[in-house]
Image (tube, rainbow, N blue to C red):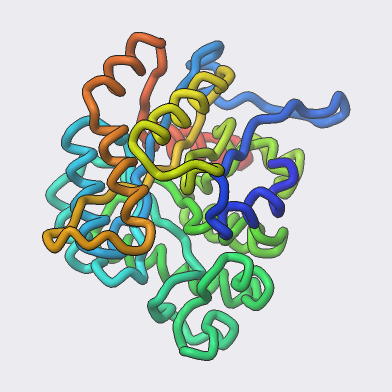
Length: 307
C-alpha cells in the first residue's frame, strides 16, 4: 500500500473517498501468487463488505438487509459497538454471511481492555484514527484487538477476516504489525493489499487482496444518490483485474426522519448497492462477487506451507 498514511488521513477527515490501489512491484521484490490470484487471473473480483455491524441498530439492520437482498458478500462487526450483543444474536441466524471483525481503536465507547493509551480524556476510545495513531501504544492495541477477536469467537461466530475501522491499523508500521500478529495467532486473514509497503517481501504471500477501497464522503460533491452512483461506476470502471475489497456503509432512514452524522451517505450507499440496476450492471460488465471464506482458506494454506 503506497503512501498509506496520507491516504488514511484523508479518510479520517472524511473529505475524499479512500482508494488503496494496486501498484506494481520493483524487479527486485519477490512475489508469490495465491491460489485466488490464479483462480481469478484476468478477472475483476469484488468482495463487497458491509462495515460497522454492531455500532447501532440502524447500521446492523441495514447491513443484514443488504445481505439478504444480495447486495453485499460479507460484513464486519465492531466488538465494542453499542449494538454488538443484539448483532451477534442476529448474525447467528445468518450463518452463511461471512463475518469479519472490524478492528477498532476509535469510537464513542470503552475498550474491552485496560490499556491507558486506548482512551482519551473522556475515558472512551479516540475520536479519529489520526489521534489513535499518535497516542495508542502498539502493545496495548495488540492486547485490545486480541480481546475484540476473542469476544466474537467466544460468542460462537465463525470469523472469516479482520479489517480496519477508520483505517486504524494502517496509521503506523507498529500498529500494522500488531494487527498482523493477532491475525497470524488466530489464523484469520488481515485485509490489506499485498503491495502494502508495511508488509515484508517474504510475507506478501499471506495477502490475497489487490486493493482495499471504497467511497466514504464524496469528493467536492453534494451527497445525492445520483452523485454517489456516478462516483461508484467511475471507481468500478477504473479497476484492473485482481481481488478488490470494497468497504461499504449501510443505513436506513430513521423513523423520526432526522438524519445526523454520516447517515445521509449510508442511506445512499444502501440505495446504490441494493438496487436491481446495480446488480444487473455488475453482472453485465463481468464483475465477479465473492465472500471472504476463500481468503481465509488461502491464508491458512499459506501458513501451512511454511511449516
